Length: 95
Image 1 (spheres, rainbow, N blue to C red):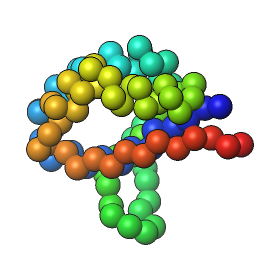
Image 2: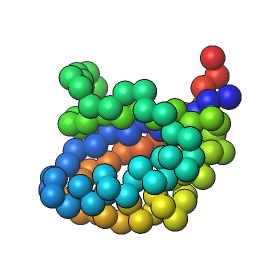
Image 3: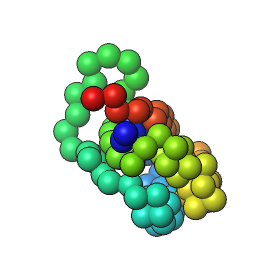
């Protein structure tokens, strides 16, 4: 069953963050990621406010986790250190 990355992001240095954006698609392509939502108007009703919200679908939980743990994504994550606040959860679809 499908699994989803739900990511919340606030970028502090867009120039540095672009290095992440250049590398991350390699991992997403390799692990069959499908973007469901990316950006757009969002209302924070409870909890910490983030500027961007992303939902990415993967074939299953193992693939979603493998993408996050992959060398490709580790390189991308290293490029966003100290330039963005990020919260990522992986959620398995039970419906």
